[in-house]
Amino acid sequence: MNRFIVLLFSAALLSCTAAPAAGGDGTVSSTFKGKVNYREFFTSERLRVDLVLAGDAASQSVYLKGLQKESLWSASETNLIDTFGYGQYFYELFSDGKLVFSKGFCTLFDEWCTTAQATKVQMAAGQSIWIPMPKSAARLVIYRRVRQTGKFEVMTQFDIDPSDRHIAPCPEEVCPVSSELKGDPSRKVDIALVAEGYTADNMEKFRSDARRLVETFFSLEPYASRRDDFNLWFVECPSAGNGVTVPQNGTWRNTVLASMFDTFYIDRYLTVWDHSLIAKAAAGVPHDALIVVANESKYGGGGVYNSYALGTADNKLSEVVMVHEFGHSFAGLADEYYTSDVAYEDYYLPGIEPWEPNITNLTDFGSKWKDMVAPDTPVPTPADPEKWYGVVGVFEGAGYMAKGCYRPYYECRMLNNTAPGFCPVCLKAINDMIDWYVK
Image 1 (cartoon, helix red, strand yellow):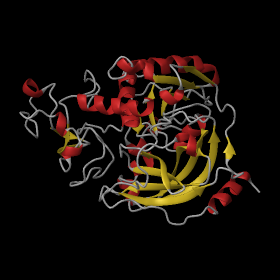
Image 2 (cartoon, helix red, strand yellow):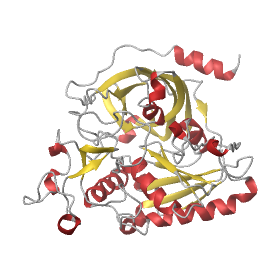
Image 3 (cartoon, helix red, strand yellow):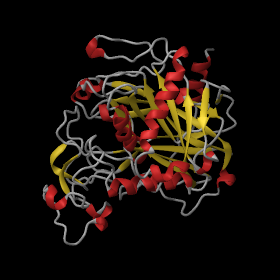
Image 4 (tube, one colour):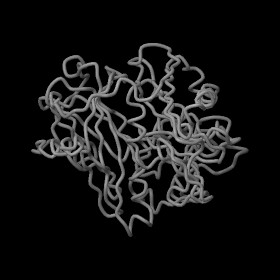
């Protein structure tokens, strides 16, 4: 029997008995309080869970595609329970009835579900997530945040048996890798930079491009002060040709990750539809964050929280675009702009506080940056740069909406590419995320 079919058949036999459901207050399960003893529940390896998301604007489903054992769990062994609550999805791992790991994430597929196209057709996309390799049988529960309520609901759940013979081992080296290390991966933020649209004989250019792009991060705060908290891994996955697909120009490339401009018919939006392709490429290296470097000169990119950041290498704005996209993918920061064309319809709903830390509709402003606003700063804050530039406030216009959604600063890198840096609210969010991985 085909090995892929065997794996799916094995997955279909996994038990799906009841597990703790999402809480009525919008939080997911919390049956275990305090710190988790990593060595009690996990080995030093990590387990990749490959999923398939399918559906349309009205409903979504998630299916298990396969499991793969990878070499090293590189994230924190101390902070295992997600306390941020970010993302459109969330997953929890239970062992002996105890919550031992959790994490939030977003997907490009969920973005697509908010477009007009999703009201007419159904589609599917691959997505991968990671957990530390459990020592004994464990239950994985996957949730999706319902936009109409802002609360998480269970999508699926299944048991994982680490002794299952159908868990595929990771190849020793999927792609050639080089690195710039600052220390133990479990105490650093490990960034895997993955080549896209580079031929095998063009990897010297990839390494140069990737270093140039990330050095832009480290010229800005908070990254500049925290350079030693990051390890860099350069994943040299070759493509058949140079460049990426640009449908609007009739240009189609055979690349290792199948990245493409014109996502949702927005010409600047460059993405990878099947996230599992990136996961497979980076299977041999430690990583807490994934960055795809595209060998292309066209302006564009994309960033999806805890999935990937993607940008081109050769545009005059490539460096600043990558800083912005990494803000999405690493720290869960929202777009603060509100005048550019987007494909989303009603992405943020009235009365439902956005989960992203840098925007608000004032439904639950107390959970955001209210404590950073001075008592004499008006809320909302007038768009008067002579008086309020450089002041943390509540400025209308954010999250693709000119009205009803607010940002914390007159100008920030999550608003435009010309801002001198990140605002204090975004700086805090990025620092908090770095701390999560390194402390």
